[in-house]
Length: 353
Image (cartoon, rainbow, N blue to C red; front, side, top):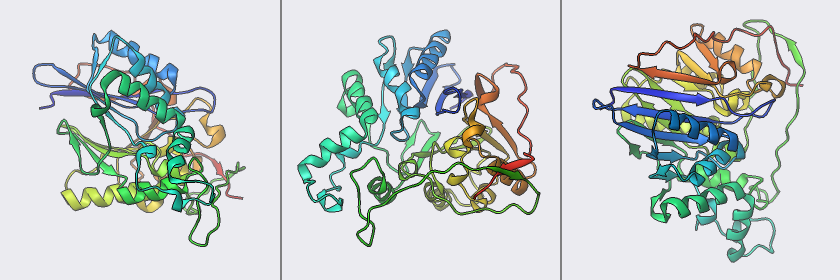
């Protein structure tokens, strides 16, 4: 039984480069800790996590989750597995080079053969492969777990997405994977553009249906059920992964149970990862964004997204890690942390043109 908890969103990165690193500490009625780390940011973020655990005199991490193979989520985890003073029990991660269902038939380059798929995948996902190798060295192959929708850990954390089908589809679309074919035999590309700012007029803001990268859509989305609140941890998931997570949650628990109180706005507050319909469906009262000091320069967080959330959910409180060294949700600790002011509506938002 959880008697107290903290969910600590570490400040990750500098300038306009951010990332994710979340430490979850659960205490039972005997004050025995259970520690979960969801992503680790960059190497220096891993150092922050290690230093914080040492302050608490904790040397055991019960579960590490790597949501997807981006460097800003994974490098700090490699550092944790290299730390000799830490004992780590389990790691959950996807390892695309071990997906036996991905064969040469999927790829545009006819020179690719089945036996070379594995090698190309380990090169394309080199940071994830480094994490796997560090984990094998520290905890052994048998303690690396493939994420499965519906799996529950410590009676509080449930994986909601991605499904096998969504994961495989988005993996094959990824530019990290050897160039793949679309339904018409054409290769797929994704374009990034910077946007100018325009005046915001409440009630007249347009919203385009955009897509995040396929690799972001492979992010593990999990539901964390605590004594006082339920949290949806989204990493960099896009609208497909989040919708799939909500559909699974509702099918298992019903619409009126396990209501989401706190939503991690995915991909550091990018507008490409959610829609107004998803925000209204979730209807959370609190939001957290993991974003870097100069994130607004790269629309992390997106001004348009922040204003949309505040339009759809007028009582929403949106917090961001950049305002503090780490943002903490907690329960039953005798703490008095400095009050963090929620975000306000922006007068200007990024344009689409």
